[in-house]
Length: 370
Ligand SMILES: Cc1cc2nc3c(=O)[nH]c(=O)nc-3n(C[C@H](O)[C@H](O)[C@H](O)COP(=O)(O)O)c2cc1C
Image 1 (cartoon, rainbow, N blue to C red):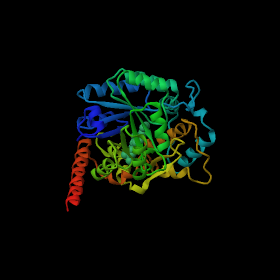
Image 2 (spheres, protein in one colour):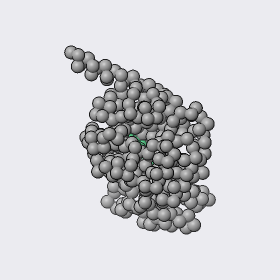
Image 3 (cartoon, rainbow, N blue to C red):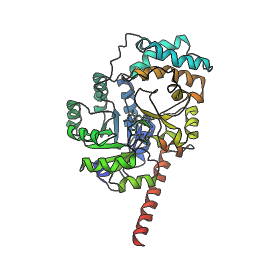
Image 4 (cartoon, helix red, strand yellow):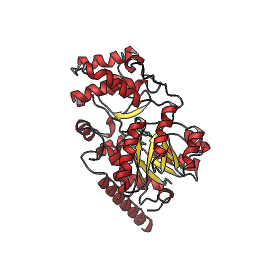
């Protein structure tokens, strides 16, 4: 296949895989697409480890890194216990519900150290982002992507100086325009059906609007893509490639625990709901007792200041994982989760996608020739 993005990165198929898991990144690039590692939740040391592993396994193929360049994140002071930084009301509310439902608390000796480590992963301050970028720029990354908002000019310049492309996720034409003004090379237009933080405009409406608004900048279509017919639709609408997240979660390479994997395979499209309980920002994730809890009339307001609600969700997620309580488990996932029903591999997802894409193209050709 030949599109602006396959030419830009020298890849065989314009399929970009967003994943927090290094194995998915490597497997996608090896299958002819391009893996992009989600680094937002990592410390610089952790990112260094992951990128070193990727470099050792990817056979020189291209890959990217995605991170948050937020100027609004609240700085977490690691000297204080992060447990005390979040309002007691939020912490007590969710932990009380877990207590009442028989989910054991974290062992006391584990709690403190774990909290400190967890909060360190959530440092989204400009300094913390730049420390992650320093690590990324020491590796042969070909693409840096901003997950949320416009990155500062000096960050974009640093990336460009090394000949690396800069991409950004957007959920509206207005956000896309701001990124273009900042000098971004690739726009990822993410429709509302996507997993993770998401906007309100559905993919089919959003993609062509953004493609027209930012031309000739290439656009990757994201949100709800998991099969070839969806890919054909995205390319027909003018996208130069597709960017997928949820579909990789079901692969044997993904980061999910066996319990979370089962929850994922059982979830239907309508189970991928918007919740504020995860991070404080609208996030599409699998419905569970956790997401439902924050909709109760007695629930405290979720915390908008990044990363406060994420600190709140950390302890319950850990409790639930330890207790293997699937009814409380949630994970970011988009509506395409309804298609993720059994274990597969990155390679076969890619293969099926390209095969179905070809069939869709053939069908259109036949319609045209009739
Ligand atoms: C588990 C999960 C975590 C995500 N985390 C991030 C993130 O840290 N940064 C980011 O830019 N996008 C993140 N996303 C969104 C993806 O980059 C992508 O745009 C989205 O998954 C595309 O829609 P889909 O889920 O329908 O494939 C995440 C998505 C999922 C499913």
